[in-house]
Length: 448
Image 1: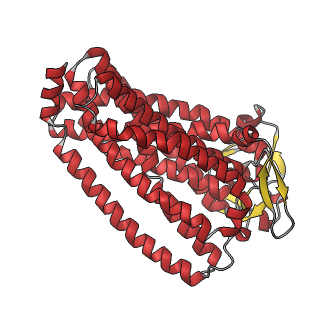
Image 2 (image 1 turned 120 degrees about the vertical axis):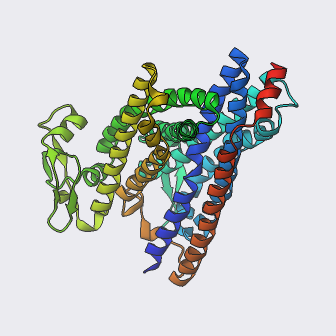
Image 3 (image 1 turned 90 degrees about the vertical axis):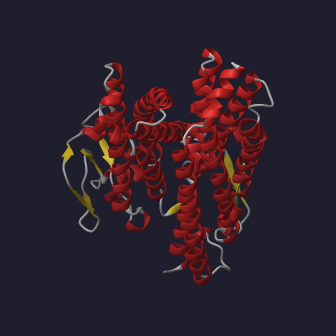
């Protein structure tokens, strides 16, 4: 393999592994705020026991997110030095904002969240929970802003002469509110809320099936269903807005996501299929005119296709198509699961419907897979550009780093991350098997 493919594989590995944890932190952060707010309102000690249990899970995911995120910062300088010089002014401001408004806020209040139960009052502790939750969300804001600028650059001009050209910010807020940032941010945050909600649902369903911690499990499942249903349904809205934005700003990506090849014809929506890139067609069922209607509100309007794009400027169409359609399929499955669970809960049958509880246990993987596939489709769909229309991916590499060095570091990262993942699963399993602590319930009852 050449150095470009190896460097892309290495960054894909490190960011995919890292991206397991921030969605969980963001989603659990929201749920912790809701759990502790219910406790403060009702003074029911069960809700403090629930909050304390999930705070421990949050601490584990936060630690793993920090440990795995640091690596990517160094990769920008080692593997992607030319890219870092080009976007340094833009990314420097966004990542500095993340450090000031997100990381310091989140980590500053984390000690109170984890260890302040018996040292500060309930309202001060709740404030720390809110601040940690806000910090996790602020982190998502600035990372998505930086990545969205790569998709739809705005608020900049180019300075220097080739090969030392770089992008320089001329309008900070135009950079922040670039054409794709808000659509992508809302969709990303909702995906994170689903990740947190389905983790809570998975653990609660497991306890119900095992006949353990039943009050804890029933209460957790009710709250998890509320968040899961809202986030899943809202993702439909933000997904539609994102698709319309891609149609306006990145028509080549849209064509790859949906396998559209005719240059200027109305386009149908493929339900699933396989893209024959040589023949320029998708093998699979489609609904004629539906994509045109979803994008333009008119089934007869044309959608630009890949036939109008030179082969060297096309993304890997089949990989992009499959990642996008698998994400959509998982998202629809999560909506169905949340709707069915809510319906049975309202009818008083959920906790006795064991086959559905068994579905909820592995459903924790659904948001994780959908989030990974969504990012994969977004990043593959803009290829061969690392910054859309400004810099190609191959031009962002470090000229002094060879394929051998990247291959060795890729192998080492794979081993280390595999060990970290095993450790994470072991610790998570231990916390879940132990379950909520009885002394948390007794202590909170005494203070209440």
